[in-house]
Length: 203
Image (cartoon, rainbow, N blue to C red; front, side, top):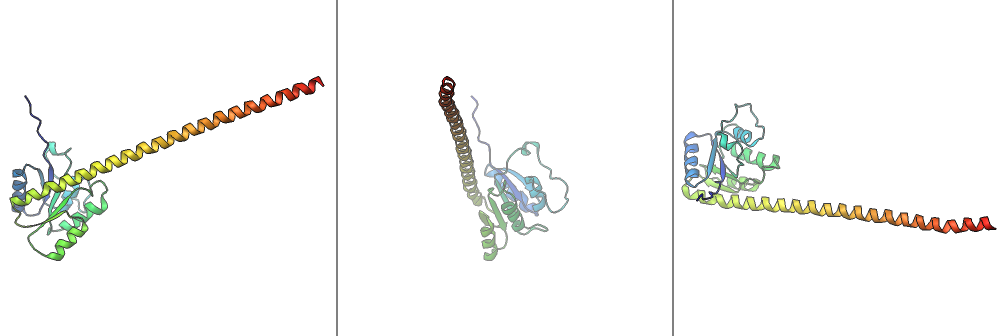
């Protein structure tokens, strides 16, 4: 008998350091996440469908990843060109379709002002490098929270659509009843006029 397997959450990992990318990929896969890794913020934006700042070559991804939605983004803070903070701002401020995706920032420097700035800009978590396997357990709650929010927004949208349909149906029915009432009034007026014309002929 076939057992239904749960689709793993898809994480996009962004880091310009190859050893760090390999480490985060291994930790994520060990924690049963599906992983795509890129080495810059602009390539991350390209993978997400947002045009980056430079004309770098297309990101190479496996075919089975092309139609898989990204459930979480984990990015290094300090990268050449576009920093992790810049990537965070582009996702949260410039993309209505991606702003609800949780973003986790990683950094080897424990600078409170940097951490606070990222959290204020919308980051869901801030990890200090080296990232540990225990950190991976903090990712899933953010993904589940994001999914609950997404489902709630979809339900609200469906409810607003149904209520607008009800309003239009009510308007149509009221206008049709008004039309029938006006037709009745015209018929009654005609009936009142006819006897008067008949009386004038006899006289």
